[in-house]
Length: 442
Image 1 (cartoon, rainbow, N blue to C red):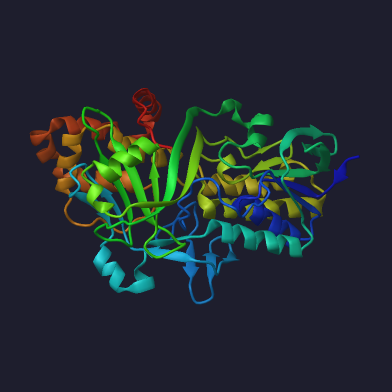
Image 2: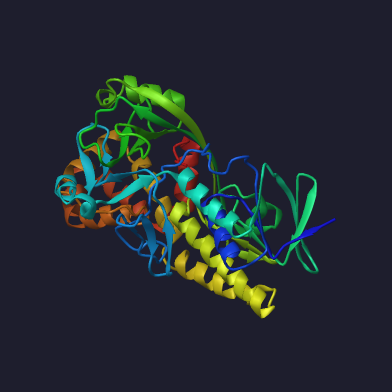
């Protein structure tokens, strides 16, 4: 016997949990299903940044009010309570292979003097956030079912039918919030017209025993193993869980050992210790052309390229649940009923910034060799404007280099050609080259 709801939400990450909370508050009979037994237990690598606070991101001007512990989304007009642990950072640094030169987005020392008013952003506990959203959903009678593997979804005359763990559920609408490798998107045919850029595994760790020059910062660093042509990158970000702990990302354990023991950066890891290891597997697709098909709405990573971020996913969940509420009130149970979500998604995501600008960070440091990178990074000695927006990074660097191009052309012309390749129209060409080198980053 089918169990009937107003809306079924598949996936209890930030987007799904937010959608469940809002749908419940709006009085919809809501089912939230999640494959994990504990949705708040984080098992997949994630930086857990509040992205982003210093500029418009997905057409929103996000901010955190530390006085009342609220994440603010003032353009869209909602807030999210968060009173869990967090760790502030004041700059984003990109280090060159020489271990000394860097591109600094933000003046670390000046920003740090300002305290919270000078922060670039912060990391936080994603599990804490998800648990809070789910508890709010339960207070509003949302049926939360964990340990449920969704293995079927089909359009019916009355809506959408979902099967999981041998049970069948039906609702006028379904929200697919099941992440970057969305099963909902695959089964419903959303991926047919999308471009696929591969599945990329990596490892993330929570580590201690680190001594970096400016500890309250995000650090992206590049080194080259002897005899190798492509770079070995890694990322470090302050952990929200404990003082002196950092989140670290590498492609594999071999890279981690080289970075911490043999590379020029080994001095950063004098008493290195791994506290936890979380894998990361990301399937990279171009965005969906439309986040709606046959009464199924996709939110967050399921519809976007790479990462919609925790904040972007919550925005999607909030908007999708409200759009479905209006459709139910108007008894307009079709695309027209939720067109407000479709139009909002286009304005906030593909129309606001081209996804290919996000993609450009990997090629930026993967196209150049060690000598070229060291030369380039030494040219930009002064801090660039504070920035935590991955869509803007490469464009900001290229703008800063414009007055130096005659000098670069004279001293190292090979760089000029490679910088010229960093245009969004070249994404597929660059992706193919980097995949051949196995140098593309997840």
